[in-house]
Length: 491
Picture 1: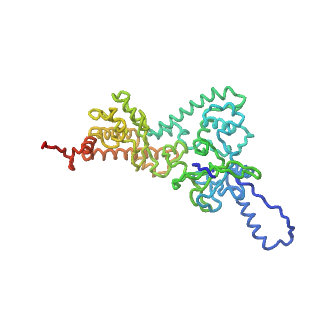
Picture 2: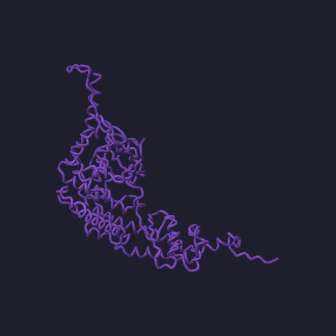
Picture 3: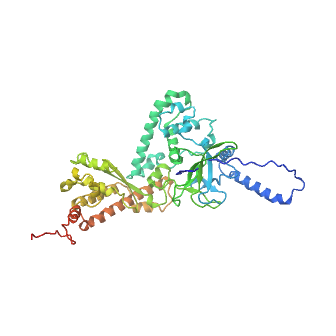
């Protein structure tokens, strides 16, 4: 049974049958001439790599042939130069959900690979990604590495923001991506310092070649941009050849990668990474997948070094916090935690999308006070979150509208350019990294305007909203259809 993954195992080698019937070489049977010639030509073409590709890619392809990954049946696509750089081009028509390629587990690079290697014993206890990063760096320095030809075709860097210069990062001024990038870079530096002190230096015999911070960033970038995840028991795995495949916003499903058990050679079976096409592809067209439906453009820029063309990927994260100085801090924290949140909550908001369901209830909770504080009493503890789904009072609702609008205004003032200025810049041919920067800051500003517009409209409707007291009076039958309070005269 196939096991579903979200992100591609190897077919047996093609075997030419040994002829048992002696045929005359002087006059071959006419019924065999064309079919045999066509079959051999087609097979030869399928097994060959495009001679115009860089020599390391051709050597890599030959390695895949030697390992049995390239055969008569698989892959259905081959490496090629494409607008994105390298990609996979179908050499025949491919149906939706058809297998594109299969790579055996013995060629994967993952934490299990590290454990089974010479450095496995000193990598115990390391974070999985750190151990794989260290393994990649070490293998890259070894001429006799099993993965030599694969490592030779990996890029030295990407357009991920972790590789940007200070001047390039200045173009992200005011964006959340800038602070995220700086935090990630500091995290990687800290992990390297720890790795160097605790693992590399005490075991110099295992690491004869110097390992630098730049090397570590290289490995980090490779894993962020090329590793597949969510395989059975695999949260981090590099799959040679499968990682050539590029992303397309037109693909709307992540159901393309499976782990199956099948033939991994002439006499062997192994787990195989099976990549299936999520769409119909014609011969000569590029095969695409969806990298991650839920990632924002900021995450795409950080992980892969490009932006998705879908504007709805533009996002902004609102960070809300229950202040420790709040006199009702403990009660509010208890309510938040009971409902899966905490003292600090993060809400990702995307362009032209509705607000996260828990955002407004959490805002109302944070703003709760004054005459509305009675809702924090223990008698309401089981019902309070339900009450917060609807407006509590005019004062509470007005406060959350004002707070969010002020936050949006403050954030917008932090960008050095306007949306119109960014739009003007995009009319000219930009350097890829500057294009990312302009796209990110313009996208964030549009989302902030989107959020501001939602709460501005909400503020204009405050008089039309129904609040807790009105709802409560209705429940008790003390409020008429016109929302007037009903008085009973004694008989």
